[in-house]
Length: 29
Image (cartoon, rainbow, N blue to C red; front, side, top):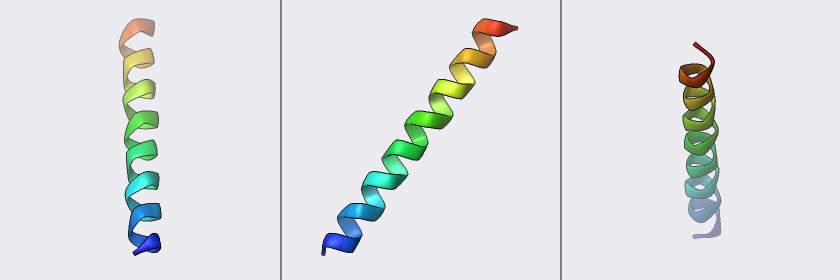
């Protein structure tokens, strides 16, 4: 159960990172 929660958390963090990078890219261009 804990592993599942950890995995979901990392996926969520990864999504946030990608979104941030994408956003910065749009602002930079």
